[in-house]
Length: 509
Image (cartoon, rainbow, N blue to C red):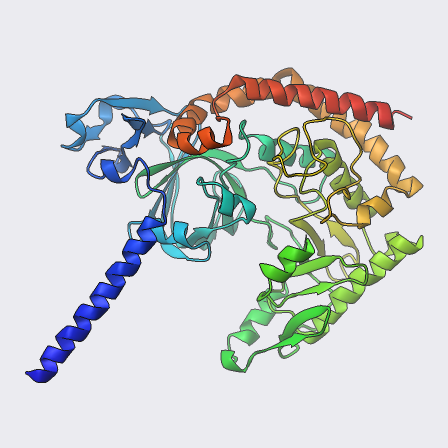
């Protein structure tokens, strides 16, 4: 009896501690407009959609496929006057987490939760219903500074979603800092127009998680190696089989002052490729990726993270760091850098960032890849990322990037910028290709954007943007803008016109 008494006391203490942690976690999460409507919801075609409260009003945000006459309201919802808003022409993504809550994900960016995802088109067609290995937070500044968070999802099998190509990893970009919501998509389409290798677009969607409307999100493929992503040799296919047989406790880190890798068996016959590498600025490399242990720093201070293979052996990290160093030396020594880099892809990467006057251009999330020498022994500048702070949309602290549409950045004006493109643009052949591509690729692209493209974007997104602006009204009010404002499109159009006119003047000769 005494043992049972002690056991009950221990269980009570454990229960109290768990309850306290849950309470403190919940206190740190902004659930404004959600908790008070917990018992207020409607169902449509089996999908639960929760009522949202804002400024004393109740809202029901419907996906494009929903029909009001088919809604079934909960008993509590029937007691209230609810304003119904409906999206138009966009697919809807419904995610349900295994716990039935998203609070753990919102409280910790690295927390992962399994679940299920269903994607339904505006016509009601169910495109896919698939299990999620996990849903988690993603991003850095966007995660820490906006209530509307970006997410990463990993499917439990490789699949194509809304025609975006086969893969397991996808991102849901919140575009919270972009009043038009469109800059990321616009930039990706520009990448395709100028011929960035493996450039791809995403899809605008309405996102629901456990019945809560989360807003307008941009679904896009993650940047990774794969047949429908970056189609180069995947060394992880071989190495993962070896690593799975190892005792994890026996795996140790290989580190020098400039290299980070792993003391692992050399299992790949040809270590010349493929590699997927991300350029990051030094502070983020040191602080946020300190435990990644897969990276290198060049002699001139360029910081690179190796994303694939996930565990670089000693030979691999020495090989790829040496290759990047040789390329850098040739670029700065006035030598034959074309022996190491694919000049055309670097031109187009620079051109996109320069035309958009992208704050993150040359600073962060810049991707490069190299296949094995037997296929192609060059470094390629790959698809871009993070275009929300471009084309006149900047924060006050973003140094050189003001609302001014003029100026040649050469991707080096930030203290965190890469030094590579500033050097490359001084090469006559490189500069000539930049000017030619601007005339033949960029100008025709933006001619269509200015003529009809922006109007199409606004029409397509207006209904969803109206819902998004109410769902995140507190955040937008604090930031001083909204996602449902035609004036923002006019500002974007004016910036594009001024930017193109300036660059034509600079590059017309």
